[in-house]
Length: 79
Image (cartoon, rainbow, N blue to C red; front, side, top):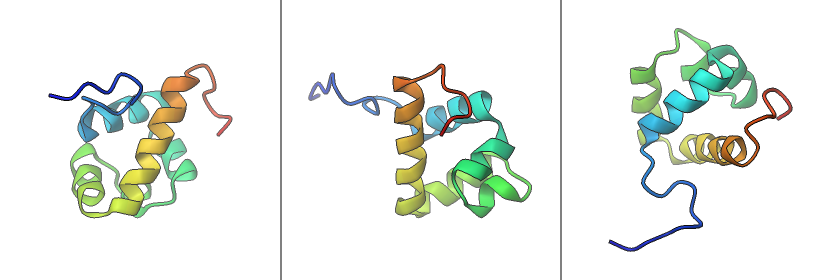
């Protein structure tokens, strides 16, 4: 297995990313930060994972938000 020490996404599943973001921001703030329906209308981990796995542009936005959170965890709502 190739090591990627500078890649904050290496070894982190989409599920783990979404759990971390939801616990940090909550669904309402996630919907403000990333304008996708699965965060706005009856959000759940399962429905969001299903959508993000099929929608590369949305997954990329979620991954970028996660990277910003990991790099600056003290900035709760400044995105």
